[in-house]
Length: 456
Image (cartoon, rainbow, N blue to C red):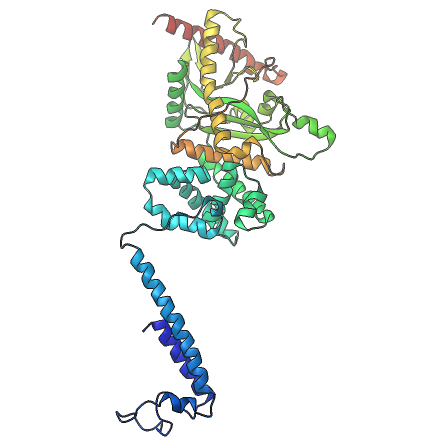
């Protein structure tokens, strides 16, 4: 007999004894509690019980019959299900995509179903849901879990991270995530703010670093030299507007957020290495600002002009001591640590035009990196959150981009920003010494490159 039914029967016996302690259901009423039962004691007949003056026996048999029927039905149903399922049958498939946002559905996917999939299938599914393969996702969760746990969030850490990554990956609004997860949009916004803030602060120093160590510096400069034939390049810089939806600002301020492509935005500035990994990120300017102004307001500019960054690699090119430098287009000022093209329209000498072509080839890595960033994290194509949280969300996506590049995640086909046009950036009076040295250094690099390639 089913153990559950036996337990219910026992509880009913206790109930009967409390209702009518003078009558016994399993022995004659004349038997004494002090006398041990013997083989001559036969159970009372149903007729004697039903004819009893107490209502307890009738109540007992009515409930017992009902519970017996339910227990039997449940037992048959369980038996049929166990017969239908083979001993080695795989676990049930994951819930439909419309229910992926519930805790139960996420837990079923991340614990049970995931182990029935081979690694490529598993990682492809996780990328489609959260923009990351399963190993990279678990890395993010493990690094953020202590901070999320300390915040006393009522949701599991991995579920909270999954919701935010899904929003960043697909560009969902807080209202959309809320409707699918049966949570309040305010809660979704609060969780998004917490996770992106942790990514932008706690994980930034670990995954976005200036390549000052000798090993990484040599690896970076060699990577750029293989691409451009130019020595000692350590990074490529570029800016890109990030569209922000529904800005509500004073009319005088609104114009400053209108970018050159005609939409409201904030300006992102990044420096990338040859592997399209960002080693500096800055989001400090409205979308209407120019790249040179944003660069001069950034921390990396202050560190480069003050000599705070010490590059442990100096080479000699035609009598010039060349330290590692970054490259950019003509929207940036020519400085000793920032090389830009001679001419935006190819009007220079053969050596200068060759230099410009190679420099722009090296600069293409940062253009591709920004394209990857916006393709992987579609929320950056139309940022649907307040201006106060926009910078940290953009930086958080840059951290996640670096994690993808370090883990060698597949690179999707990207859409690049239109080519920039405009006059070369002017040089400030305070930059003149860097400009004059940079001018002679650029010419030396161009002449050396032309000589080396023409003699091959």
